[in-house]
Length: 228
Ligand SMILES: O=C[C@H](O)[C@H](O)[C@H](O)COP(=O)(O)O
Image 1 (tube, rainbow, N blue to C red):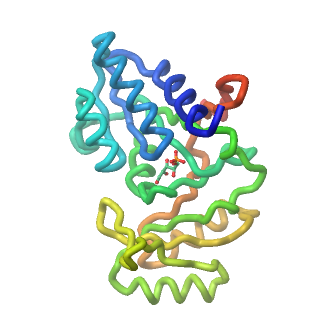
Image 2 (cartoon, rainbow, N blue to C red):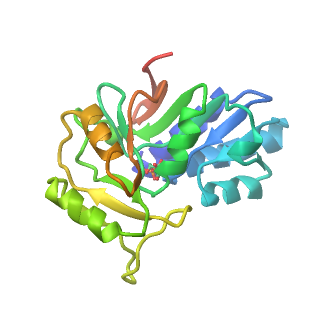
């Protein structure tokens, strides 16, 4: 199976966790796309009745186009489950997200969700976080000074740019700075440090967040349970 087949596999597996009547957080990314397709099938074929809260405009559009009811986070009083992808997951179930620039909305949805389920192909499992550049969402105002500060802190920051030379913009119209760290030995300390940088709205470290990870392996999906 190639990587896309593994993503499809975990996407299809994840929707088995969705129950009638649930309010579901819907993540973002190429793996989640398969999950949304599979969810749409269940809504269409089984009459599954759920309300989705999307973590990006693109996921909201895909879901709506498939007939899935989407509400804003502020329109619901709780989320039963959120299904999302990840860029890296380490041995302690800590993760990096935001490769698609959606980690701010994803984190807000995740912390308001009773359970969090991540779907990844096996390439995302790592022993140490940090090979994948750590995304930060930053306010455009004064962002060159934020970059300079992060550089002085030794974080090897770079703005995420489009091919046409303009900034990648998040759904909240902010910029992304990626930190090229190589290896993160102390993720909680790093998270605390980044939380203290004025201008950084949110970083892509998702610590102590996920309950269950479904990993796409060549011989089938593997379910890893982190915590209840
Ligand atoms: O901002 C994007 C999200 O955090 C994604 O869930 C993450 O980047 C994984 O995306 P993909 O499934 O495309 O690898």
